[in-house]
Image (spheres, rainbow, N blue to C red):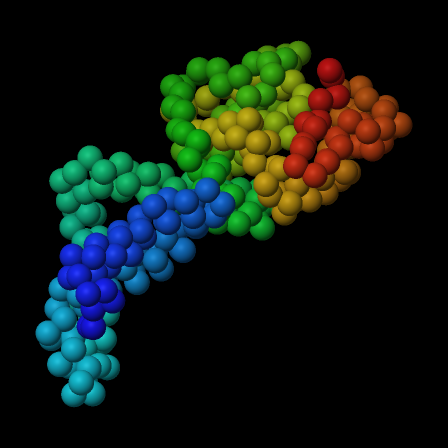
Length: 283
């Protein structure tokens, strides 16, 4: 490469500054663009390929000059896929324990897969079915398992709803508020507390573990904090709140008149750009 300036030192300094500016430029980019996991994977793949080519410059340059680039590319891709496959196999047999970072990633990945399966099988798919991967990951980060022994109370009638539950294992009995006997039993993949969760009303039943039960708990705050950034989820929630099931629930179990429910729909649950007013009929 011809020298830009007469001085070799100045040329080296300029070229060094140009090559080093990628780090601060990348940092500044994150101020106005937050890349998705897919974007990060593409950028890292490109960077990894560039690094590989730089480290094996003699081999790559000679191969390209001879017109043998397709076999070279196929070998790189095949080697990368082989590495990923073997790495996953090693992790499945406990290899993820080799480092704290891989351990956390593996465990979180397993939880993510399990919760996604439960959510896909849940009966409330009319709200969650169109959730984007980005929105889902926001919810999945705060999802946690809660375990209850047989006979333990999950929540009591009249309690304020803080979580939406999905039954991962076992069954839960809903106790009649008057007779204190089980009036309904929910099993694996059923949701628990959905009506109270989405309408902002207190629980109308007491929930008790019929056996040892594991519940996925989705915090209410996480769900509603996501609404301003997820128009798809907002529309799904609005559609459900205006459904016959929600109207009958508020009228039958909480004594709201139909006119009060309509006013609540029109005035209490207002969505402004960037702002969400939560439905709270009892404030």
